Image (tube, rainbow, N blue to C red; front, side):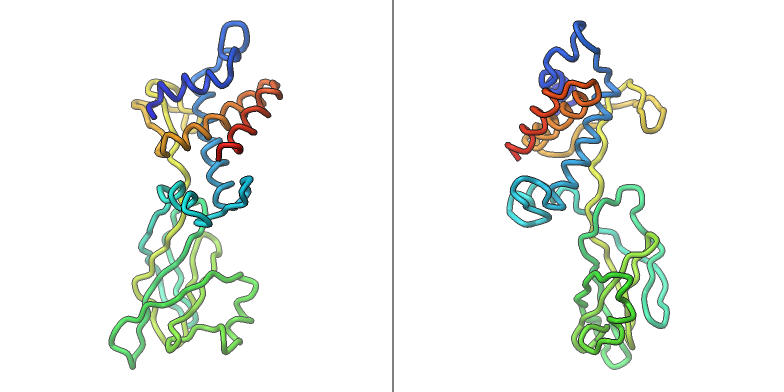
Length: 234
């Protein structure tokens, strides 16, 4: 959906709120509200906070709606005696963990072995390392990882971690209108940046954006209408 259509649809949702009878809605307000609505909608679908309680990849619809946000990042880092620690992380656009995949090798096996890696709590690291059924094991091709300080630690034991890849959900790309002052950077946008979601999802996000703006100017009836419409059609 192009930005002109997006703006028209949002102002239509707000009815007279964008006319001279009420407050004029500036382009930067449209951008800020829509970008906020994108993030809120995405987080709710990932967490399963929607009316159907469907989280990340819980149904075909969630897989289809959210696949555009999935990213892969090859990881680099250093090996220690107990874990491989990364030195790169997608700080700028990171939103939610999906998985870590990697291979392993040891002195006895010349070929790399794909490892099953599960995410564990940092508080339970010592307990897992002591547990013979849960600790890293090359024979069973299983290990675990943790997140700490925007770094990933993949634990190892008598084997080396090879070719680690981080799969994660990134933040949606923020829309921009050419020629408007970007409220995030303080710079004037030189070109349009359109929403990357499908048009049917954009319609839902528009309802949420209208609810955000309506709440900002104390129109609670319109705010509730937008919120209910966004969830009812989700």
